[in-house]
Image 1 (spheres, rainbow, N blue to C red):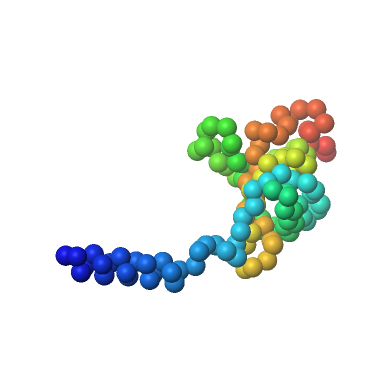
Image 2: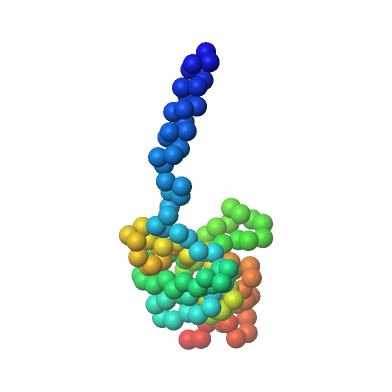
Amino acid sequence: MIKRTVLVITLAAGMSATLPQRSDAKYECMTGRITAVTGNTITAVSRGESRTFLVDRRTVFTNWPTQGAWQANRRLSTRELYCNSSYLSAGTLVTIHPRHDGTDVARWVQVALDQSGNGYGPNVCIR
């Protein structure tokens, strides 16, 4: 019994030494505040680190509920996203997930809408 336990512990230690310390080392997501938005980029800052991500037509934007109702994570329509200018404005909390091809193209952007505007006033869609 002791020999088996020693064998299992030795195998487990050997396996853990050969595995990478982080499984997603190349695909680091970033959670932070937006500092700048252009037509095809989003720049965010977190703990003094600033990163710029490209945005294309395959980038998915979803609501990120930060205060309760965790099951309410829903996809944002293009009209909802671009008509409410405060959704992607400086200071908005976001989590940006890059694509798995090693580039800084955003695959998925979670936007904390409960800290954005309410859809009235200057952030209403202008037609």
